[in-house]
Length: 106
Image 1 (cartoon, one colour):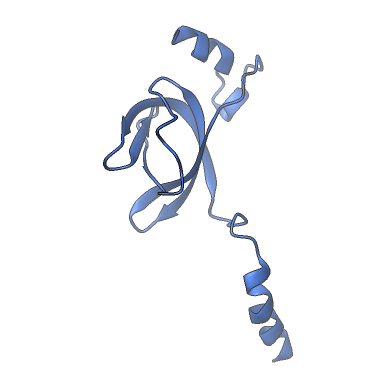
Image 2: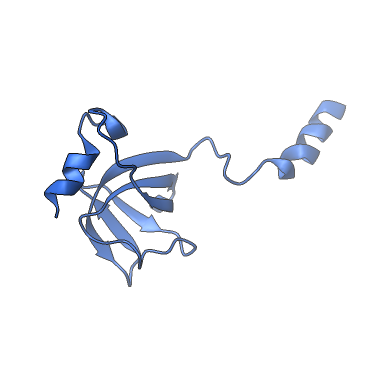
């Protein structure tokens, strides 16, 4: 009984960013809809962007990493950041060279 009480008491101490259901997607932004706060990646996946995430700094064609959670309403992007520039052939887990992907958009 005491173990259950301690488990419940310590629950608020777990940081919000430590959710097991968070995932990361990699791709090029192909569509940004500001009014509905939706973005689409080159894979065709769409994400609702959380209100705390600033999307006005993102541009179509930019290669990004999207940290998201699966919710009852779909995928919710909780963080969008530029993908790191690298010459590693398997960067992003898709077997593509991110640096050459970016160069192709210029």
